[in-house]
Length: 508
Ligand code: KIV
Ligand code: ZN
Image 1: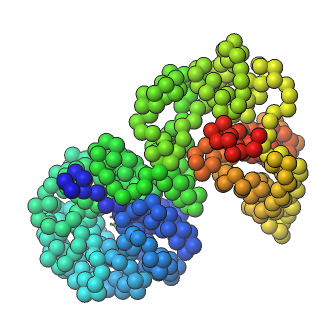
Image 2 (image 1 turned 90 degrees about the horizontal axis):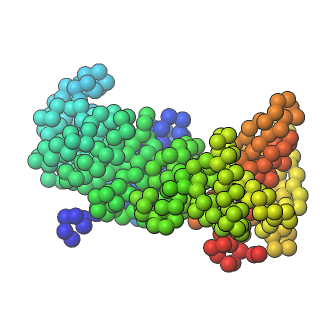
Image 3 (image 1 turned 30 degrees about the vertical axis):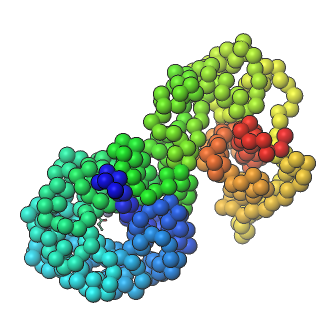
């Protein structure tokens, strides 16, 4: 293998630094589920947790090591025997031990001298090695540490038997140029692989990690969705995709699983992604403007730097004031609506008119508009038909919804509990249509159009199947549960109709 073919190793810290995201706290089951998904994704190292933190944290790490995944399972420990013993007790493959090296941390946090920090690091590494585990040593706040001391401690770490040294940019203050220089400098004193652990306080975590890799570091600490302390860590998806697409360097990541992993982690952690987040945000492969939709529909590379399928996604088009004929025509084809050339120009004109009034059109809005313009007044086609639903809720009971739908003239009944009547109804509908695979609810918005307790409310949703086929839908009414059920059902139908236009197995 030439140097450029050597794979960069992915040290995933979603379950450790990622869990330190303010407000995130994972159960043992959550952590195990995430670890299994990270393993499927192909990360090389899973930092499963910080066992000294709590009883539950230690149990989670134990549960993960018992699973015998392919990835190296690592636990975090300070340079104290107590921390290391807790980690060893979890049967991990490796220990990531750290001590701060900047004078700022030594003086104000640890209240020790440099020599003592060095001694503690050496002792900890030797102690770990005497128990036969792989050791990665981190010099916390490395990027604000005195370079000569950093070299001294890394040199001592190598002599003590460390397998890897890590350069953490703990508060995200380095720049790509400085990271390149720092790694080049550290390489002169260490003969073991160098890792990088960059935080995103200035939005530079991925750029800094890439720069360090280009200078010769071999492992990147990353977290899915960029989770982590404060502004987070370098995001796995951004790092892996830019490393591959822009620097032609490979990892063991199965990139097609990136999106489903991101979704799973967002759902479990409760940390929603901004729509414009690179790679995994809702809009990352969405197009509205006429010029762009025309471009991507003719030749995707015109406005897409990578194929959406490469990360497990699909392109989608939004109808709005910037729309053009090509995009609207493609959207209508997906929805199975045939219109003439003249009708298409009328539809585009109406879409622009509505867009000028600030309206964002869902697939159901576009479909209704197109059918009205084309004079298609017959009832809109539905693959899943709602027969009935009922919901029970109250102060002392778990909200429970039951739905009855027909698909291809067969009846499907499902019940689900939820946090409220809307949630249980959405989940019951998802269960009733599970034979089509999971259709996830990605977005739910409720807006009151009029005032009062009998106000007219509008529900707008976005759903997506596991293949990345998505649809937006809306419904209005005085009963928010009924409107939510109608919108969800319409969204599911729109996904199925779009899918049917790609796949003939969906019933007509
Ligand atoms: O950001 C940091 O310095 C850390 C250390 C534990 C490596 O997370
Ligand atoms: Zn960190």
